[in-house]
Length: 298
Image (cartoon, rainbow, N blue to C red; front, side, top):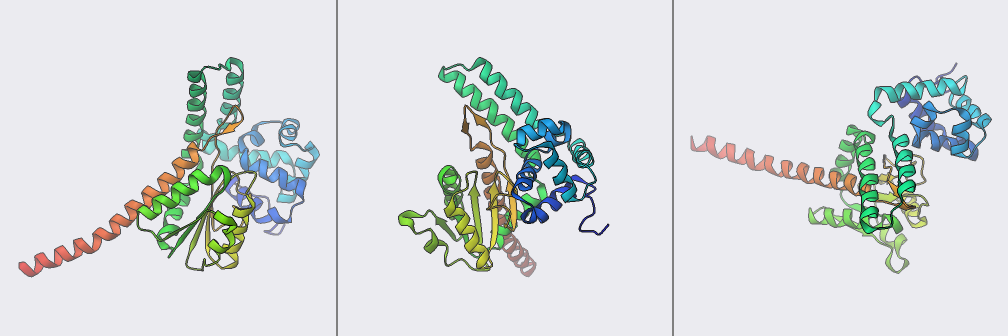
């Protein structure tokens, strides 16, 4: 069996294989690929019938997907995912906890403001705890480095993503990082992003359904050979798939309203980490100069 068709041996290899072969898959298999990436614990633990029902496909399509990735069977794929989840057991029950939370919320479904607040707090706590396990430390480090190395940072995010993108642009500007906030005022999104170059970085924040303006901004950045840092709800979204680095966020959904707490927390962590990095870099020359002066005096 060639290396291209070799079955992934770990969950990380499976994730890489899906991302690598995603564009070559049919739309139906892409639908399954997204479900596997977004809900690995469900894929690992549920039957094919349940997985098919939740992902909107026939069980036979799941078998075809597994074989397209290199496995002999769907059960072989499930075992690889299950082994990976056991190694990172803190994330194992997240989807199940979310389902239990939704069921409990529907059962009590109080209409008092205090009840609504309690539901949002509980749902966001679940999402925030999952964020800590979901984001890889190396990816977080890489995100900070991308910002530090960029000559100019362009920030884009429309509709539901707008509060996050505007906060991110504001915070970077407060840190004296050269930043362009692509807000599309007057329909000028294309003009605002047009000057991006290979030494620049585009940070996009985008969730389903993905704004056309954000997708176009990502395409422009890539065409201009700029780096792209994508914050999205799926690793195979039209903004995350072509990105230099993609960070996936799973937000809480309460009473059909999706929160932004986890996304805002992630963005704040990135910005504050960049601020620490900048402060440390600025402190080094001062320490070097002070040491040299002391040597001269002595």
